[in-house]
Amino acid sequence: MSFETLGLSAELLRAIADKGYSQPSPIQLQAIPPVLEGHDIMATAQTGTGKTAGFTLPLLQRLSETNPASGKRPVRALILTPTRELAAQVAESVDTYGKHLSLKSAVIFGGVKINPQIQKLRNGVDILVATPGRLLDHVSQRTVDLSQVEILVLDEADRMLDMGFIRDIRKILASLPAQSHRQNLMFSATFSGEIRKLADGLLDSPVVIEVARRNTAAESVDQVVHMVDRDRKRELLSHMIGSQNWKQVLVFTRTKHGANRLAQQLERDGLPAAAIHGNKSQGARTRALADFKKGQVRVLVATDIAARGLDISQLPHVVNFELPNVPEDYVHRIGRTGRAGNEGEAVSLVCVDEHKLLRDIERLIKREIPRIALSGYEPDPSIRAEPIQKRRAPQRNGRGNNGSNAGRRGNGANNGRGKRPQSGNRAANDNQRRRAS
Image 1 (tube, rainbow, N blue to C red):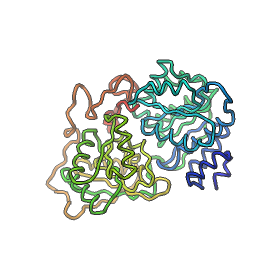
Image 2 (cartoon, rainbow, N blue to C red):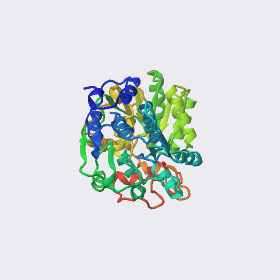
Image 3 (cartoon, helix red, strand yellow):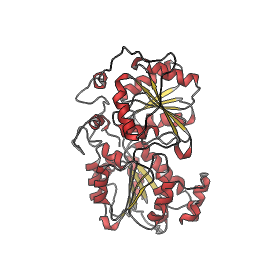
Image 4 (cartoon, rainbow, N blue to C red):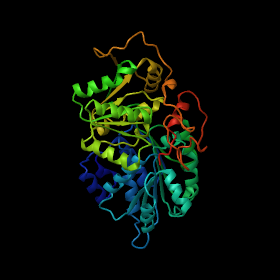
């Protein structure tokens, strides 16, 4: 089936053709028609399968059919995302697919000056892409009016809950028209119990779309585990990148400090590298990502804040330098490769300390990941496991090992927002609750 059969306008079909796409993905096939018909949606699919276009295209069409002819444009569609990177990329998709339409859009997030955002909002926009914290800043300053929102999209809703944004989301919902007066679309990589609970209070008789089994990686991603001692991980990573001539590698660490340190070590090994995490300024994060996409940076080292927000076409390699504490984050990390049907490779460097984390991941994805011990890098059987928390960076001023202030708003770690009962690996994810917006 082609995009032409989905009922999209000529302007949107032209923009799709400009991107070189001809066949919609499964999530797009199932989501676009009911969104065009005005239904609420609760949709999930494997990461990298085109969820963004699944809501962007029909949203643009619905708004263009009643586009105001003149006067100040009210915000008629609001798209909420958990991170700055994802907000920027969703906004880019809105611009790309809507370039032949007369709609105006804007993106707002933290980490940058608020005054230019205020000016753009003052000029009027039809579509607003935002992170929760910065949007509430605008709401409190009365620089944005959400009373005429016709379509609400929660993108990566599960990640927003994980990051402690539930209270911010509820405050934002209170600023919107009544539920019965707007269309609500929830797109997520997973359908947890908490997501379903949120959906029950947000969506009205939604069309439920689940393209793939929960918490599964794309079949196009080749997964492998390299068993190695903890102190030789960096050496092995540099060896693999150099010996196999990897040109573009996304590497995940658990902590911001670890990302900085690894990027510096790779630089000393002669591999152009940069780190991207929540402590970096927005300008630094944007430059690092742009340099990586252009090939000027060979290795991009990231924390899990980037696991959902990076969209790099044809990224060939993802490396878990350290396994995540939360198994679901493994799926989102490796979902950065093998996107849009392309093949990709996900490599995990696993030491003796991480055997339990590996078992939790395999239990989640319901498959065993092949294990390889490369010649010359075989783990020393005499090394015993060490509790991971003992090797974390020291806390400073009451902060966790990820080390940034939560700010007035953020992920809820220090300000009491969105706290949820902690158990098992989920408690370890608290360190990801920092101001991402």
